[in-house]
Each structure stands twice: as structure tokens, then as C-alpha cells.
Amino acid sequence: DAGITQSPRHKVTETGTPVTLRCHQTENHRYMYWYRQDPGHGLRLIHYSYGVKDTDKGEVSDGYSVSRSKTEDFLLTLESATSSQTSVYFCAISESESREQFFGPGTRLTVL
Amino acid sequence: SQQGEEDPQALSIQEGENATMNCSYKTSINNLQWYRQNSGRGLVHLILIRSNEREKHSGRLRVTLDTSKKSSSLLITASRAADTASYFCATGGGSTLGRLYFGRGTQLTVWP
Image 1 (cartoon, rainbow over the protein chains, first blue to last red):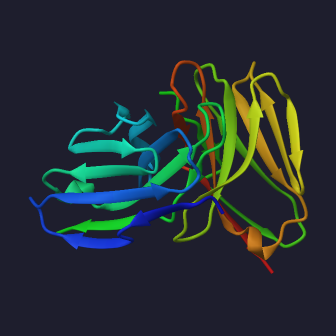
Image 2: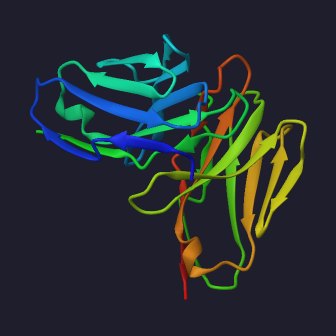
């Protein structure tokens, strides 16, 4: 398995609180991605990174921000969590833009 | 939307039978990928087929790509109960810097 971990694996929080999810890789891959998975929607891209400090928005980026200060870490922040952000969040990494992506185990986030 | 769409949404077969899942998409692509997701787990990459390829094999998996029809199929031969999972197609390419667009998936159930 690709060396990719996510923390925390489960989190329950309240509306309005900030939340940060961490993705850590040991593969030295350039590309990193954050997706959310919801029933009936498949996986939707939130943000992605194509290098240290290089990030861009995906299709559902509102309410989320990201940071990548090191190759191995990609942080996803919900500045003020809302119930609509209850979801399972997956991080993925890729060696290049035309290669397969390797996924982490996911973080289940519940916003009450 | 560039999102792929899988068909059928659900498929139920007996062990030993073949399973065929289809994926259609709307825009030009550089590659198309298939992933498997077991319940409660992250996605696992199965196979990547590039736009200039028509067919690809990996073990019991066979993927075809018809760019003129903007469609792909995944065939799993001699299915096993362990193949029970959700299968997703994802399209990528052009200037999207590795972004993948996932469909909603096909839920495959293989009965012993």
C-alpha cells in the first residue's frame, strides 16, 4: 500500500467550530488531493496541490481551505464547520498528473 | 460536467459469473481509470487506460475504451465473493493537472 495516512480517522464536532484534517504521505509524490464522498454523489474534488505552496480549487471548494508547506503534508481546514460538511473525506496522492491516484483510508467527519 | 457515469448502479451475480460495468463521459479525456472501494475503506486503483489505447488487461480484469462513443467498460471474469465492492470510473486529462472526475459508482454484489 502507498504510504498515505489521514488523521484523525473519525471526528465529531459542532457547527461553527474550526476543523483541520491532515494527510501525510511518505511517497514523495508531487500531487495531493482532497475529496469528499457523499451518498449519491460519488467522490468530489475539494482542493488539490501540484507542489509545495501550489494549490488550486476543485468543484466543491466553498467553505474549505488548504495548505501545503511540506511535500509530505496536505492540510484541509474547515474554518467554520456546517452540517452540510458532514461527510467522509479522502486524501489522495499521485506521482504525476497522468498517473493513478493512491487513496488514504478516509476521515469520517460529523458536524452536529 | 466531465463526470463519468457508471451503469448499472447495482449489479448482483453468482460466483463464477462475469460482471460487466459501463462508464460514459462527456468531454475529451487523456485517460480513464477504474477504482474499487470496499465498504468503509479507501479507493484502490485497478487499471488506467490512456486515450490512445482500446483495451487493457490486468489479471481477471479487462477494460475497453471507445473514445468515439465516450464510453468504457470493465469486465471482471470468473467473479468471486471477494469482488463484492463499489466500482468507480474516473476521467482525467487535458489541462486539469491530474484532476479526476468520478462517477457515482456501481455496487457489485457477488453471491457465493
